[in-house]
Image (cartoon, rainbow, N blue to C red; front, side, top):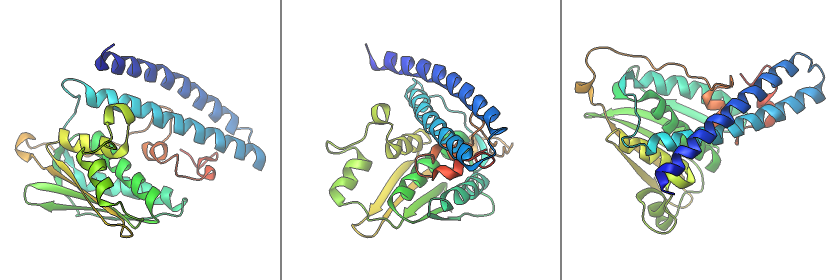
Length: 261
């Protein structure tokens, strides 16, 4: 069986799993009405966290199929990239604080770009969650450089040795991630950048953290004159995209009734 057929099969499986997870979420919401004691609330928090982690896996399966389509399915539109980064950053800041991670977001008041807003959000979530796994402080910075938008995600973690850095980001060596097979966050972010005509550049040294810069052409000449603000997208189960993406980092209490939506 060829890889394309496997991808289609995985996408169908992901769709079926998502239906079941939506039903589980509905059941969890009904149980919240009677969860008045601490033990019940803790059990529901664990259930909600498990649902979010499964939704994250399902989302990765769907995203891999989307990125691997020929041609890849993208929905570019003229977008206020600064607003996208700022609003997603605000949501992640509150969530990551519960995991003991300090997130700082720097961006201009406005920066228009012709991008697929959903894919750019996924890119930011992947790189930011990677940074949060490595360190206690993560910075996301958006600036305009010539005709491109530059997004840098930097952490204060232990850093990556040069030989592993090349394997992780340039495709060299046996450790190079294959986004179609592994769902590796770095490889997915690189693929998204490439689909926008951009590139992903890492910089690191042992003990000095990791900095990843994504440079994406603004491509405003393709966009006409209509500006679209990035829509707020929610997972079908009712959980926010950021909560699902960060579910393996956050403490279970984040998913307690009244907190996880």
